[in-house]
Image 1 (cartoon, helix red, strand yellow):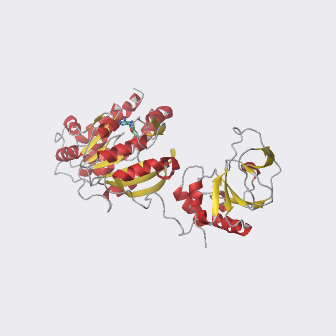
Image 2: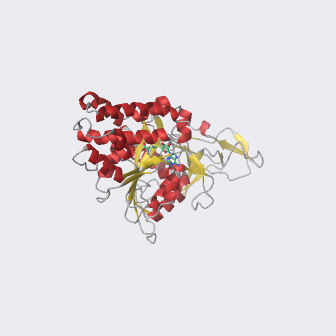
Image 3: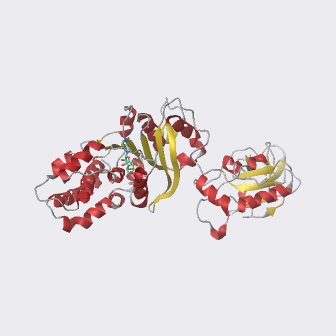
Length: 442
Ligand SMILES: C[S@@+](CC[C@H](N)C(=O)[O-])C[C@H]1O[C@@H](n2cnc3c(N)ncnc32)[C@H](O)[C@@H]1O
């Protein structure tokens, strides 16, 4: 098994748990703290090669992202009745540990592990991860008893057996075989791509496994039950996942879709928190998209501009038809305005007549040098129609007025718009739909 090396760490956890059982709490307290906070992820990085972690989608939720997740489970939107939790892709058990923070304890450690064991369910494809999850939940229970353990009062093997709901298995298959689950689903599934099944009704071809897990999870819930997930942000902000979002909204009332940012300092992927409640199928889809921040203004750019992607795909489109000035991202200054480009190209398709605003599609979210705008625009002037490369978005004023273009540049440069765009779209390129929804001051 490609994750067998992780067994080195589970052996260490077992020794630690044995020490706890022997009543050596004072000596091991710090070690237990590390085992419950970040060490499982750090050991994964050092014992399992990056390629294997990527292939298996194995990235454990530690540090601030787990703390935030735990606060959502205990927050006001969380169901007061949730007393059972299920993580169908549990890894080393971090989300279950987060959920255990809200579970009650029994008078003894043995009683607590029995109580928790009946309420926590999880599975993972990899035995070493499952072993780590059980051992860490045992340690989490012991930590709640803070050294009350007397020698011989509990034996480790029966303590671990109490977590019988946590085992090796295919969580996706288990979700698909479940209807009416009464409890709270916890999801940080693998993020890699898989092929959509033939009966997938929202996409075809390659799709994120996380999207498939979440939909299966939402469908497995009983009406009124909840799920919370840490998910790749492309599901929230990507236009590709629009049909997935609608599909999710047909089974789930989306209570929260909140951008978090980079998963952790070692994992360069933006994530968001999803919280939702299973609803009756008959309920109509929400009319206001819950996935994004509210639009900044009541009027939007699309009321005053035609916003489109540049029509020329330079390496694909034949060099036939009339010759025209050709505008590419390389020829665009970072701001301001420019005239007709000197570069030309034969192009038989649509040309764009100035004045218009050209916006680079490539655009990184987050801090930008020198207060640069997230969607920097350049006014293009002149009298000749232009062939525009598809790495650019063009906004042509319906009025034909250059003054409207200048107002648009001001809108694009505002820090409010850059901040809103950073919340709305985290991937490295802007979309026409997002530019159309920017505010237009009347
Ligand atoms: C992103 S990690 C998250 C683990 C854990 N939920 C957490 O938040 O720390 C995803 C986990 O899913 C597991 N996994 C991948 N496919 C699975 C499947 N079909 N069934 C169960 N687990 C799976 C991987 O082994 C990995 O441990």
